[in-house]
Length: 124
Image 1 (spheres, rainbow, N blue to C red):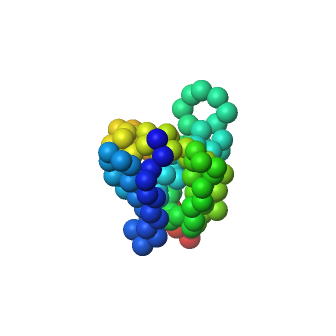
Image 2: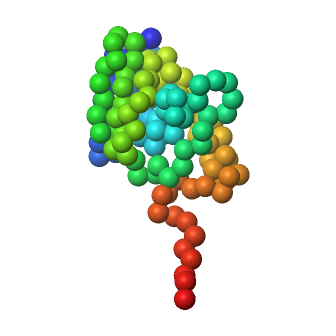
């Protein structure tokens, strides 16, 4: 199901999708860490790669990919994911569960959303 409207909000770093029966706003960080690209999803079954440090990522541009998908280019240079309308709808409907699972994985692996956050070692 193709959305009736797609709006990029650079200031809020989000993408708004308006379907006939629902409206969703998806943060750029969420879209980036759940990219359908091979870099994130891999080439087979199993757990996708854990992408961290994308708290401040924004969306540079969006473009139609045929009639079935959207290509999203992020300001961190990532641009290889093709987000089908079906996948975007799935991401939107499962946002809470996906995001909670993502945050749990980050904690379990000792990684952070903020690329600036980390351990500082003083040498001296």
